[in-house]
Length: 627
Image 1 (cartoon, rainbow, N blue to C red):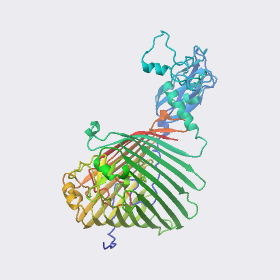
Image 2: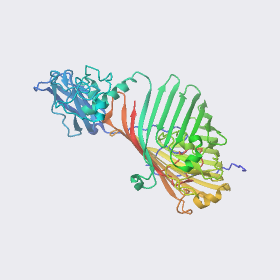
Image 3: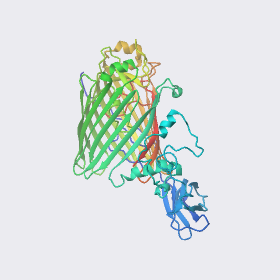
Image 4: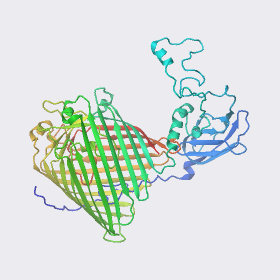
């Protein structure tokens, strides 16, 4: 194709002052969220009480814990009184613990302006071994009961299964003659239920304490994910069943930078895993390096004929590596350059290279105005989103299968030549305004089809999709964005983009696409896009919310080829679980709903998301443990 670079006029926009957030035209990194400011005099209160023994006498040196929006402790004085000051409003689990006394049953106390504290907490002194609650060993029943002994009535199950269970070889744990008393362990200060505390609290506390002296952190995600076309599909057993995902990340700081290792695995008809590692060198001097690599595998053992035919030897393997350098030439000039190389075992040309370079200039030494020019060539394989880890958002292993609609049964990669010039400046302190103009030349634009029936093939379900080449396109456009931090911890943004495109080559499978998905075939067109984002952090409830909402006139439509306007979204909520915090671990509940299919990148084709036909809604939920 003849490639001519033409810069379109830049446009400015005036937006409401209430909008804010990271926009696609931003040149610098996203600003971290700050807690929403609260007035201490009306959002905090003191918790007071009295610790007594079973005879009503005050107990000194008893440790009282309150677990809720935060974790706080106090020690009773000589009169048995304690005070826990400056607790944020909310419910708290209050317990008391003293050596030689049985731990008191926890109680939930609502801390607010009208709360006056706990009247008394009673502790009972430990009696004789026969009177104290018996602690069980790993076997079933009391520790001094021999394995295989019957009950007091002498009756028991006489089945063959019961006989084998009673005569199993005794393990090391069953042979233990001394029961381990866990009631003196401090974990009772941090577990809300005594029975659950023994089973969950103590092992979690011990596991996390193993890493308390090692200078690294991480998180574990235990997630369940599923997809659906319509809400009623969630209650249908014929649809794609939910699947579990286990994710682990470890981050280790060093003297010069930070190491990160991530891994995820899922099991089922589609078994897959992905592993990635990266290193980012801290800025010291003029250069800041970052490098990493990833490897993903997908193995399919289901009954979809198209998926089985497309997956050679029953599986796919993809590896990728990258390296980038940010070079600060001086205070007003910086250069960024690097490349990414990926190898796909299901492509005819397996290796794909994606170089990128940019220059950023600050014309005035004491002004926030900056200009950036970016040039890149990006190569994308069909199905790459299943194997390449995203730069933001949830990190999931390959969860869908895909095949080509081409009769040649060959996957064709997409190549994008991208040139962009952008400028940004801060106004009134916290309002960031950016404008940009870009030009793209795309060869073999990717088309992704869900729920499409092809001749002699079954319709693609939410767990499988078809890919194809949509032809070549030249796109020119401009955009303007406004972002602002509305208040501490709340940020929002609005981004408008206008694109004019011309398709220079028809796809090789134009006849098949015309009958199955005519809305993905384009000629000359004008596209308007409005993308808004909102993110917030509320420390009172420790809730994090992230929302992206996209309106575009160019989305492919399965029902009416002429009506292409549509909306897509991404919503993610993280809620801290205050009653599940241990010594060095923090528990969170995660819920995410998403209809956007691809990750939005500055150098990605403007049609990557638009030519995804009927993307299913994806739901992900589970528990996150940070340590």
